Length: 166
Image (cartoon, rainbow, N blue to C red; front, top):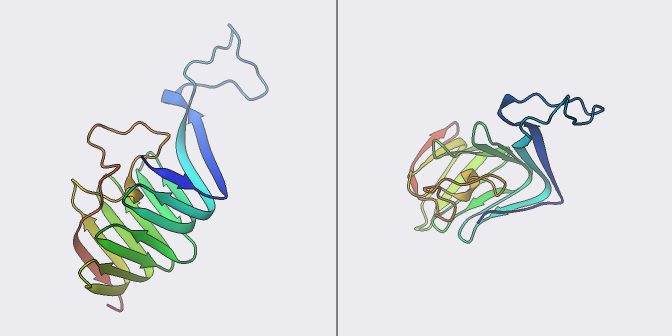
């Protein structure tokens, strides 16, 4: 339910479950079995990045999703997170901490709600409802979503904290 479009997509792999992998020059054999395969631990998108669901969209030049920490960081020019309820922009970075349902916009950050309210600051920290979090923190396509994962749910901003030049 999440689509990632970019000029270049990169997946970073590691041995699954701490299994020891044979060195790249050593083939898998009975004496040296492949004991667990690999897993993706980080996804990276570069160039004209667009991450979207049917309701939400994130735009930037580069995005990295750390699967262990469940954190998406988007950098570049004209950073933008759009949901049916809000538009969040930033100059430096947009972050989304999916397990905490927290979005952080750094550098000339601005949020505009669908009813016309606007808040600007150096840094904005937005808290989303647990039941409806935007795509920026959803489980990537390569990972299995939990049954209650809000992949298709639109984000609903509950509270925003503003820091610096509010």
